[in-house]
Image (cartoon, rainbow, N blue to C red; front, side):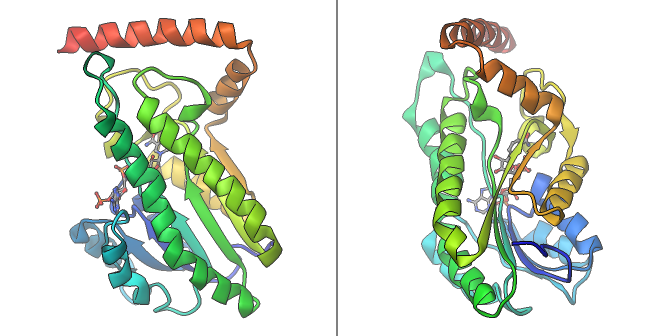
Length: 266
Ligand SMILES: NC(=O)c1ccc[n+]([C@@H]2O[C@H](COP(=O)([O-])OP(=O)(O)OC[C@H]3O[C@@H](n4cnc5c(N)ncnc54)[C@H](OP(=O)(O)O)[C@@H]3O)[C@@H](O)[C@H]2O)c1
């Protein structure tokens, strides 16, 4: 469905308290949209409210907790019908293969997959109400391009984002008949508090502001797949087209290098 972000839209953004979500919030606020912001920490959400207190609301919640989400369910339509939900809240935890712990896998899946799935319990009925009143309705899921190549230490994160992308694509199939768009955002490296913790090179990393511009302009153009930066995503696509044995050799060599660097930094 076209017409996304053409007028003033009512938008729920999760993970708005820092990084990509915060930058997307600032970009959409400049566009005059009405925003409901979610994250666990209320302080940064309150600070963002001051950008436009009459059309930005804070709705702090833990997206992995049904009870916490239930407490904010009533706030999603406080400005009127909800036109878009940007489910961006997420985490990235890396494995140390020498000290394998399934908790790391669980933490990634819990926040990135289960948290997003729980948010949909709130967003979907609201988006259906938008369609029932003839308005556009868009569900945006922030995944990652990281899972397109088997990066060492990223077993948990990559698995969570692969699952999330599948979840989004299957939702796209199911919701097409209702006219609800499902958009998948697949960023490469973006400079945020999440990646500031990384101790390895991050090729083609872009700023959070740049990422937000690409996301918002892709949404306004009606795109359903938003992947950036192109130099990174095309490199991954080309690598992914190689025979599996070659991918495995490259991945193993990169993982050995990464693990050596990690050992040196201990
Ligand atoms: N940065 C990158 O290079 C990159 C690349 C690809 C994809 N991504 C994805 O982009 C999204 C945003 O990442 P970012 O880099 O902007 O990281 P970030 O700066 O750490 O932001 C993560 C956001 O998610 C929120 N969040 C995390 N767990 C939550 C929970 N249980 N309940 C509610 N909110 C929660 C955090 O808020 P609170 O701490 O206040 O809860 C924060 O606002 C993530 O899904 C990430 O996987 C990032």
